[in-house]
Length: 451
Image (tube, rainbow, N blue to C red; front, side, top):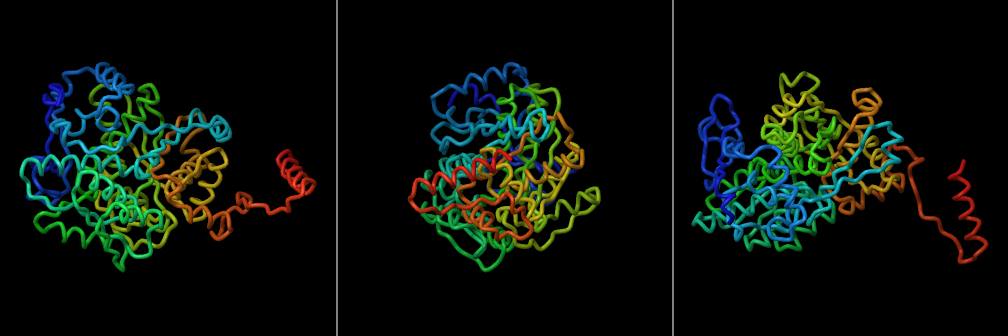
């Protein structure tokens, strides 16, 4: 481990401002023992401030071209801000992060924006942004085991992507994984990933919230470590989305960042990353954050309409955006805190709206999963309302790869999603192997494009 990394310290700290109890990162703990609130990883900011914002930017930029482990990871090339105490030997990485900002001049111009980028977090080892947090959690677990902490397995409840990330990184580390999935509510592509990685997969006849209740009880048993986002180690990896976006935009903050949310750890992480960048002098202003929810699983949206004065869980209804079909998110208080600091907005999208938004922007070269469709639908709605103004710069966080949701794509283009824009549907055109017939069909197609 480099001497630079050893200068910095991190610990668990209670998010309750009136408590602020602290715990060692090597402790098996997920909630404050004094008040029951969630924890966050707190860094020694005074030590980090020994470098100027310019020096941090230069250091992070210099690592982008490095082929030396662990700088080949978008998380571990910012290790001082994540887990500064771990040795290289404990790092469990599959080259996560370093995902590109998709841009389309056509789409940006058609929407009248000053800039539009889709952060492709789904182009990762297991096909979702969950890898960003799981590399940190499994690294800390491996470090703890090396220090004699009795961890026998890691476990999570999942609506799909978390299970894939946990199973993969646990398999790489040689640590058993236990997965709880809601029966019939996970895509085939998501279901087979943890199975292939050798996880112990349990299908429960309930929804995600029901699975979450079970895994919280299971992980109270000695030796099974909780890997859901209520464990703030996950947030540490996911927060690197923020400095990575800024780095790709030449360290200039966009006007808006839009992210879909279910269990709400991701928006908490995003905000934490931007806050750290501002406090350490890498940027001089914060972007505004928009949290997008599916209308069928919208407890935070309903709370937002009441000024966050109260929050009530809902029974989530089935949604095409299955990974965010969560009615009782565990990170809600963290999310509300971040949204207040960032003058945030919560918007929702119906099933038709999220499907149309995904299909509409696919025509510019994207291949959107339904959750990104929720975020894109929120953007289109807020553009129409004038909340997002013409000429502003927007980043949309895409949380998973569209290839994991083939059923979603097929259902849309087969016209099986009620209320959608049929003009966006596309189909395969059958034709006999006759040159004149083929030529006629091509002419019809090209003529239709010029009308």
